[in-house]
Length: 209
Picture 1: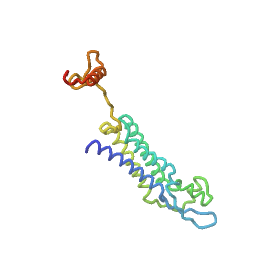
Picture 2: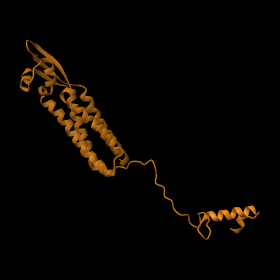
Picture 3: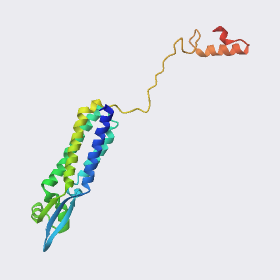
């Protein structure tokens, strides 16, 4: 794989993983049955925005990082690679915490729906909870983001540099063979004046050359 294709593939991986994390954040993560005082249990659908509220900021940071990678130099790429690893670990941790403690992840919604507050009270009030595939996909997205960051660290120096809209222009003095003719004083304008004067007198300026 060429360096240019490698760069494109890594940037697309960062974008895809970030988009997957953002998509998972909008979906239902947990279905919880919570007891209500004086009534039957109520089934609640807990979305990623409740179970892992910080996930959206992490995913959007990953999208912004992908854009920065397109113009970053070698040193900045290393910094961005480290940041991408940190983002991936944070996304994975948020998903793992929701999977490990569904009642805790559902606490905000349960409190709003039933009025039960406090960690122990909420935990006791949850009769049953089922996790959907979306938190697992968020966990996969976090792993993919961390892996992309590691790839950036390993391959950053092989990537081609950012393109430049303007090219540097260098001016060099013309040599005797290809440059403008000059007189003994080094001023090409005086030679041009002599040619013009010769034309007014009916002389051929090329005959002297």
